[in-house]
Image (cartoon, rainbow, N blue to C red; front, top):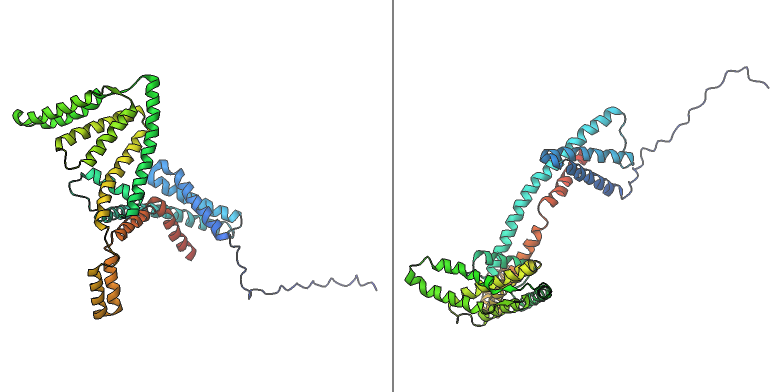
Length: 386
């Protein structure tokens, strides 16, 4: 039957099932790390581009970089796109100040963590110095170099620590010997040798010092220093190898006959040794750093050896501490025992050294490099809450 004359029936709307009661599908695990990476890259890159304009330029650049990173997140589907230009504008107006605030916070934290790092470093040095008990007569510069070398090398005031130090000194001396050999070969090829006339000039500074005394009082000192210069001048021109051997002999002589030689003879010989070292370095500049490290370790060896001898018989629990521990147990029970043991532990040279090494390691993670992630983390938490 032809029913075309009838009006069209309205189509029924398909009813969609309401699924709002279902929980949201979890995002892929890599979304958050990817967002964090993009935002950090935006902050760092923008800040770097703004560096020529100073701190303000870094802050502004970081703000723009962060906003750019957020836009990339939208484009790749890590975050929902804004619904219309108004929402997009609001987001942009929030993201630029957020990125700028993170950079500014990082700069402030950088100053704070730098100060913390300096405090931690000085505290660690003081603890290590108390372990070594360096005599007050040791010059401040030598003292500090020895402490820094000890912390850097993690040398404990024990037989094992001393053995490790002596092994490192031997290793550096082997490197120095190789470089001196190269310098010697070069001197043979070029005909350039170390002239003892240049070396003995280092004694002139000592002569200038003693010349400040009245002539009659200065004469015996000056005569002895002139004699030292004359004795070393007899060496004439020598190779870097000979100079190195002479320098080592001077150091070993003083160590072997410590306390037997007169002070002025020691001062004169040390001036000669310094002159030899400086002239050797002229023949091979690579030796400058090796010699500096070698000197610091040799100075440390002297004080570390004394510290080891001083604590050689340091028992794990000494009689005095055993009495204190027993007394503590009677008076206060278990807490008293713990206090007695803690008293011993924290006075142990090895524990003190370990503490100074830990503080040094902690200092390496402070400063500007650590401040950016901290500032980013705080800013990220705040913006996520918003």
